[in-house]
Image (cartoon, rainbow, N blue to C red; front, side, top):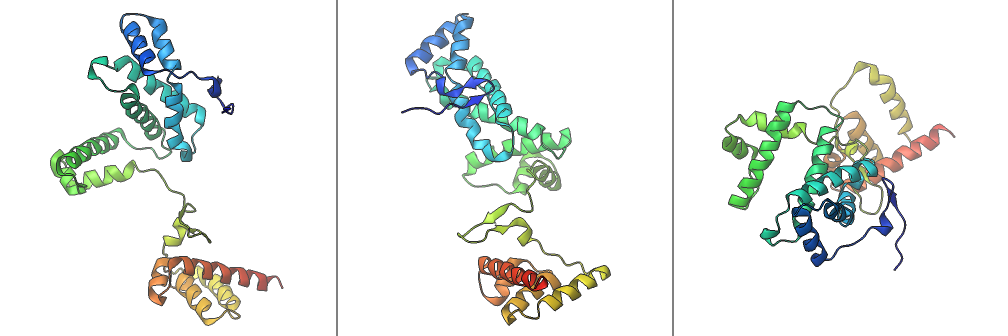
Length: 259
């Protein structure tokens, strides 16, 4: 089977070597005995491992070259700290370290700046969460995490929220094969500003030719400020159906405006 050539950081990934378990063990013995060239062979022989890990982060909008370089740092750390006496596969040990290195990079380069103290609380909370899951085999509440850490409940909630990645309002959250539903469709608007009356008047005029169900949906969505989910619950149809009817009605109104 031929491999497609993909160049990352000047490395032709189709030509990367693959080491057997025996070769890996021999190289580790040599490296731990002071052979520097053996370490270089271990790095080059495990770059495919880095490639497999960074594929998990393809949807983050980061440059592949940057993720690859950060992943290589994690790989080198795992090589330098790997203990042959533990009798585990190197990949089992290395993958979590590579992932951890990439996650730290993504957190530190988050477009929303978070203070060091908040990040410290959040990371400690994540460690405590993992500890409690292993102990109780269930997801702990923020209150339980806060109690274990000895900090106020509000500090944990605020810190965990602060390290979450920002989400685009136009990121699809559901798709049943038709029109997708976006984050913005879930947001209601209960503000009724006086300067919006002109827009509302124009919208009402455009709704004249719509059927009663379409008028009702647009009225609830744009005059009452309800979400698609709220409208769906009220009239007894799915949110996907509300989304399709809403888009169809708006499209029809747009056509009428330019007739």
